[in-house]
Length: 266
Image (cartoon, one colour):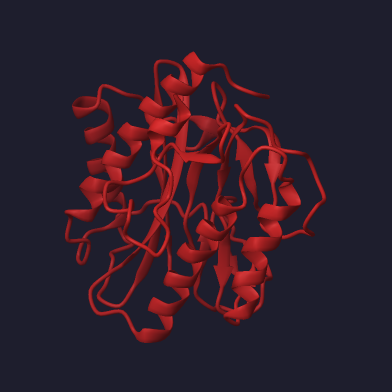
């Protein structure tokens, strides 16, 4: 379950490359693009520019390199040529990347054009909730501390946390132990140890937390049709706290807390 220093170095490299994929998306005008066009652009970048493997493609029979979850889609949205991003949409892109046998996993919810204030607030709170969970990571802390921090922040802002999907250990396999719930009680659950690597990826709904899976077997939507937003990072437990392996260049120092850099995992 814990990773050795060499493995952490390789995971950090995969995380750095994956962060650059989101840098590409940050520079892209999404309005007017289909989610399939975004998928093809990301695949080209990962395979040809980064010389890496899009780890989601072929996993569990999935045919694409990313999930594209628009508006009321909670997760696992399937890219489609007919699903064109419009002004006012929010869309989460969930992407995995494997380099040298090790996988990183991250997601970000984007605002497309002029998004209304209520949607912006949901997206911002989802981002903050993820960081609340990350901030709880340190040796000796427990998984329940992470979930409690996330759910407390969501509830304080009037949002619900989806319970059917969780974070997960990651390394040579995309999904490893432990499962990282985004709700819980402080002081409960598995104790964290230096060298553990896992994702934190809360999904917040503007309405109730209930979800359902559509007929395609992949796309998960809110039962009440409310908006949903998600963010995800791959993190490692370090001797002094936490390293965010998929940290994007725009993030350090961008908020009130100067979060640890990936160098902390060395």
